Image 1 (cartoon, rainbow, N blue to C red):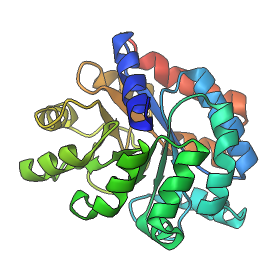
Image 2: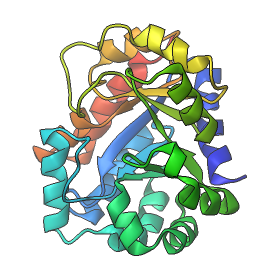
Image 3: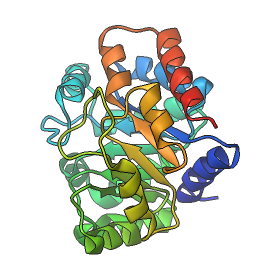
Image 4: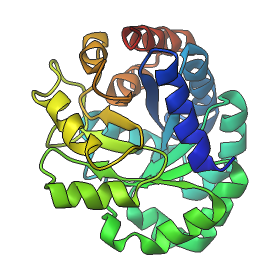
Length: 264
């Protein structure tokens, strides 16, 4: 089974068991790569289906203050793309779930796209999401990923036209990441209005699982997505706790509350 197939199968298994798939996000190397592996293990024990692992980058334009500070901590610990790839087998061993490397184009281009895809596949990655790479310009990444079985996940946004959604969904594999609101990442009090209708717009263009993220941070947000989305992504709420020094038990407890909210 390829990485793309593992991701899709994991999310379909979650929906098949009557719950939303859970896709937590961590910044690799925050506060260090050893802790990242332990947090990943805690998330897997809590019921994570797919793990998004952020590659630290100095200019994370799509991210709000919480994840910006996390990337600063990760960079300060000496974490770069090469270090993430070296640590990936240990993280994969700690969390036996598919892993998507999430980041910005510059680190991957600097590393070399072909070399990155080969090393990521060898290290155990299952997919890649490059936030600032539009599908129309993604062929140099998609082709080597397809050859090695890695998923290429793309973002759909509330502002996307039908034509744009069709392009995103056509290029995606593994799942489609639906951004719930305009703006940057970050925990919010309320889930964005119109998310369920937005899921329906995306659903018209793909049979892939649809995971909703950006602003999803509380159990009630997850509950509101039941019956519409296939999965939810939580980043800032977890990263905020990591930044506050939470141990693995606290992270696991928070994650369990989110997984439970996705049942039914």
